[in-house]
Amino acid sequence: MFLLVWRNFTRRPQQSLITVLVVTFAIAMFVVAHLVFSLLQQSVSLASERLGADVIVFPQGMGVTPQQTIFTAEPVNVYMHRDLVEHIAQLPHVKRVTPQFFTQSLDESCCDLREAKRLIGYDPASDFIVHPWLKNQDIQKLADDQILIGGVVKPFFGNRAIILDGIFTVAGKLELTGTGMDDTVFLPIDVARRLAKESPYLQGLWKEYPPEALVSVVMLQTEPGSLPLLVAREINNSGLPVQAVAAGEIIRGMRQQMHSFAIVFVWIWGGIALSTGIALLGRFLALARERKREIGVIRALGGQRSDVLLLIAGEVTCTIITGWLLGSLLGTAGALYALEWLKGALVIPPWHVDAMTVLGSSGAGLVMAVGIGALSALYPAWRASRLDPQEAISRGDLD
Image (cartoon, rainbow, N blue to C red; front, side):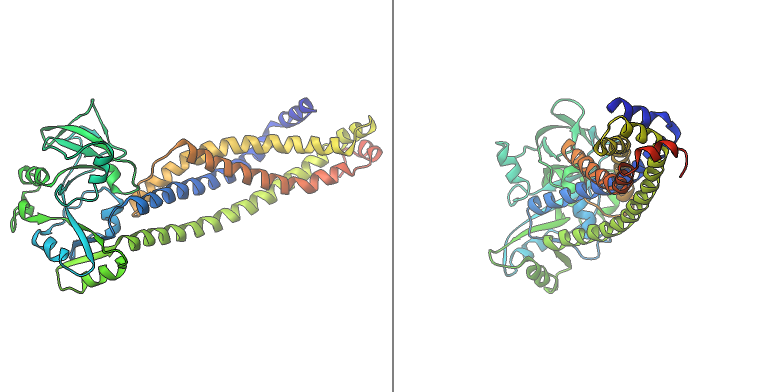
């Protein structure tokens, strides 16, 4: 039976190819949508768990959105006076604060760290964002010539890196967070300020204050029982030249954006699935008609209706499996391309492709392929199994 199925599948290569391509397109589109949203959802969930701050305070009128600052590692040279840190720390319901200093962007002309996008200086004395990662790796404190790299950053050689003509030792590596921290290099804030002051590309930023007097953002934790959203609102109403955003609101906004796009993709793919199902139904009905004489011979030689069902189901299975394999490969490549395109068009969290996520999307694609194939082939297979053997042989070439 298997040999007969395979011969029938390959006997008309053009028709089989067209049918396979229909399935391939539908599954590729499904895998693209499923993999894109799986990776982004994974990143947002990581960010929600590992961001480390309840409220993030930015300079007022910084010109970029909080989402851009948190979820991307694109360099943002925004600054406010360091005195504001103390004012924020004294506001009600604020448990502790720690400043960060954004310095020069990283590219091939200044460093040899692959995937790194920016340098961030953190304050060792007050930090609660970076310190837990150091503690997990038995590092008490970074020296002036040491750095901590994000989860996707890879040094070129050993545990050393060249940054702005200085040689630094990679003391540790962060776990993935689903935020711009993954593409960032961390070092003590005083070192970051010194590098910024010496950088010829940033001299125009220090006309009013030197780097030593500035910070970029303030990360804060709220008192137990306090709502971060209300604390952020109190900071914004304090009269300070800052804008505060609750980390949960940033995450929620990102989830809402993803949900909106998910709805669009679902409707688009639903239309594709319906069109694919109708096309396959027509193809499998034609397949049953083409096999009338063959089915009649099988029945006349003692074959059961179940044998006819297996024959049709076998050809459908060959079509579905081939289309699924091709669709999964094309869909995975398409998802990576779509993510790169979305990265340039929208603010999205960094993604990290892993084998289990890809296999999960491919598995979901297989379930969809089997579902569409089964629904499309059910009626043609039942109809073929009901054929009278004598009529099928005598009228095999007639409709």
